[in-house]
Amino acid sequence: MEKRRAIYPGSFDPVTNGHLDLIQRARHLFDEVYVLLVVNPEKQTLFTMEERLGFLRQACRGMAGVSVDSFEGLTVEYAKEKKARTIIRGLRVTSDFDYEFQMAMTNRKLSKQVDTIFLMPSETHFYISSRLTKEIASLKGNISEYVPEFVAEKLYERLG
Image (cartoon, rainbow, N blue to C red):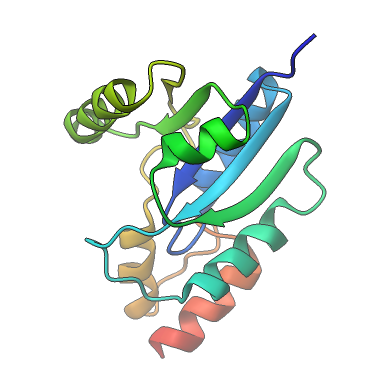
C-alpha cells in the first residue's frame, strides 16, 4: 500500500505554535508530512533561511513521520519529487481564504496529481501569526504562548 504523503509549505518566519498544531493535525491524516521551508520573494524575512530551517528542525524533532526540508521552486514540483499528492494549507481567519483559494487553484492547474487540503488550527492557536508574534516581541510583550521557548529567545534577541 502506498504511503499517504503531504507537503506543508511556508516561510515560517518564525515557526509558531499554530504551525506546529497544523503539523500534528496533518500527521494524523497522513503517513508522512514534509514541512517545507519555501522562498517567498514577496516576503521580507527577519530570520535567514538557515535560521528558520534550524528552528523548524528543532521544533519538529521527535515527531514521527515528519521531515523538514527547504526548496526553491514550485511546491507542486517538490510534491511530485516526494510522491506526495497533497499540499496542506492553514486557514486561520476568513481573510486567509481568498489568497489560499487562488494558490490552490493555481497549483491544481500546474499539476492535476497534487491537491490542496485546508486545515484550521485549534481554537487556542487560530489567531497566532508570525507577523503578530514579531510585533508583540518587538514591543517586549509576552509571546510564550505563541512560539516555542527557543524561538521566543531568538526573537527577543533579534528585536532587542
